[in-house]
Length: 238
Ligand code: C5P
Image 1 (cartoon, rainbow, N blue to C red):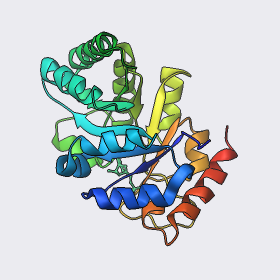
Image 2: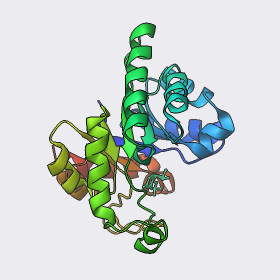
Image 3: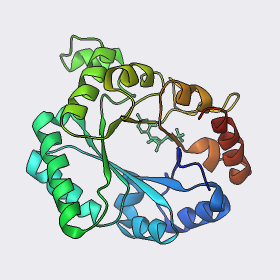
Image 4: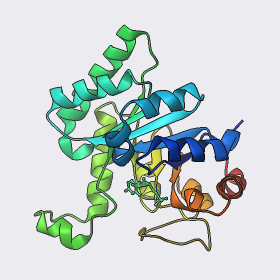
């Protein structure tokens, strides 16, 4: 069975590209991430199609609005069958708490498994300069941990974080908290536009529960071989 800790990012806008990559990767990959680019262009069809192939789906739409609107949006997405949904922690405790409560209630009423709900703490693209321009005085790392704790108190299941932040979040939030990390690069591969990266094994050692990997697999000459090499490295950390 495929290692469900690997989530491959489907950063496409056409279903035919999705079908081609999922076909190439076959049973080596069980989990896919659908983001804004793909969802805004093809809609719920991609989630339903992936579920029909027996795949798990992290629907990465990063909701951020008033509590009632976010909760309603998540309930709509839940019916598509996604396994992980997410919101911005900067929407606040009440937004996260309301979202988690309503999502659980909706899943129960529908007799469906409740998707995991995770939070974005601070976007990893945020630099110190942009951060200060927002009027923030505390170091970004302090805010990341504060937001992760707040998400946990609000009843969320985990966070999205850079592999370098995973260790401090694991310490702050304990063993059962999901930590989903993008910015993962096998040793020797291109960084693309990622800056603060870690290898698959290092990200897992730092406490990540899931790795989101896109271009190192998608853009490889042989995507299946690239995935298998990454999976082999992941096997060294259980
Ligand atoms: O191609 P690559 O492995 O860099 O893809 C990483 C995926 O994770 C992309 O879909 C990207 O949008 C997403 N992501 C990220 N950094 C974040 C949050 C999401 O790279 N902080």
